[in-house]
Image 1 (spheres, rainbow, N blue to C red):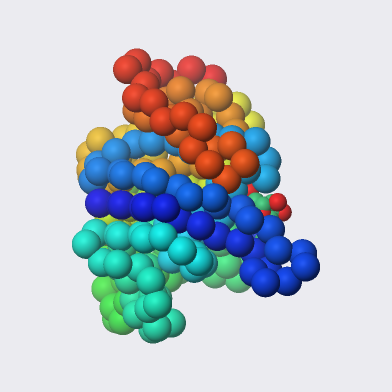
Image 2 (spheres, rainbow, N blue to C red; image 1 turned 90 degrees about the vertical axis):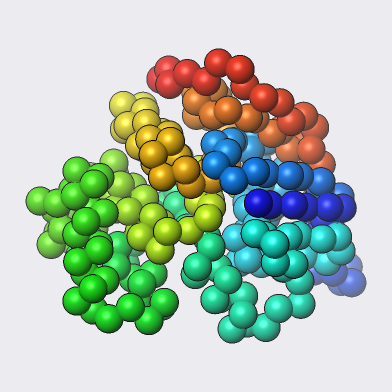
Length: 233
Ligand code: ADP
Ligand code: MG
């Protein structure tokens, strides 16, 4: 589903402050995988995730998402591909503060041209699935951290993406809530078969995944199957 070959990315390419961040990444991810990317701060995890999510481009190499070569695409085509194929979950939730939970969840469908009534109906369905039906009309400021992340998960799911990319999804949560969020992501992966890539520096999160990739200084240091995934916080 994801095929990456010899991928390089340098920030400020050609400038004196150029920073070579991804130094030849090779990676294959099959549909339905549940994996984590670990590594020290600054090792290039977010950069890699942003390239995979078509939020940022790369310099050399090849990236194929669901059979489409992601390179030299127009802004419109990138956005279209991103909106249909990728869901995002962030450490800081990235909810819109003046929109309620339902409207936040419905937002990706707005970009995909779905009429309001239909998108709100679907948003309610996903909120209920995540146990937040009663909070549909709450603003983000009226929700706990765990509830906000569940809203973000519903928002990531609503466009039925092929892959969900989560950048430190538990970074702002306490242990009990982190566990809850990881359990939900595991469940979503199992029941909907959605590929889930989780960037984390928390060992407990990576231990819950089936495959653990370590990034060191812009290179893959190890890539191993986890034979016994456990949710242990
Ligand atoms: P990680 O997520 O593993 O902490 P990042 O991918 O965020 O690492 O960053 C890798 C390196 O690239 C860091 O040294 C960071 O400071 C630098 N970096 C990240 N984003 C940018 C940017 N937009 N412009 C310049 N440098 C950046
Ligand atoms: Mg990061």
